[in-house]
Image (cartoon, rainbow, N blue to C red; front, side, top):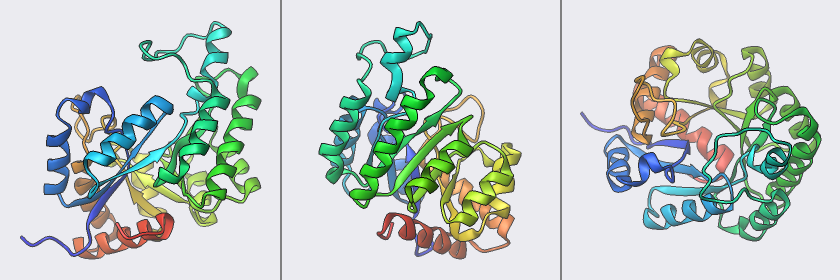
Length: 275
């Protein structure tokens, strides 16, 4: 069977994860074999951003580095000082939020996108929400000044993140794995932002509904690998976006070539380049 002209892509992956690192070359080869032409690997803090740049350098034809500051990492030292328990890699010291943003600012020219960044009200205590938002706004302004798209993580803070992005005037925004109310997700899409649908879409009613009801020109695909596998108990990989694209064809009633062309156009619209 011949491949459609347009390549697939994964706009949100974590190729630096220890669960992928040991067989990185195999994972990348499987992605290529599945028709994936672009993987956007997202960094979480300065150390992970450096690792992300290294992965992209090893696979320059396929991997694009997004550099970011995970919302919890943005205030992690303050959380730990308050005695808040949070599972993390203790081999690395928690990043200083402002210093991490300074690092991002000095390296943003190397970034394909700025992400993942955002707001998290699930892990972060309310006493730190204002500080977290302050740092998020600084990152949003940094990305806009550098003309880079934003890749957003939110948890229990979707409406507030949307308000902040509107207030700051951010337009090139990808909402990664949006998991809040579908009504708000559709509002975000109609506003002009993009939402990326993960590979476990067939098992999640909210993702299925978003894929079906969003304007088609606001849909992107992601894996969030190694998480959110379409098969419970297995590791997710970028190759699995092929299954999501197939499901989009089922929901849209369109052949594979038309789906991939639409998704490629969407990718070009937000990232400013062809996949």
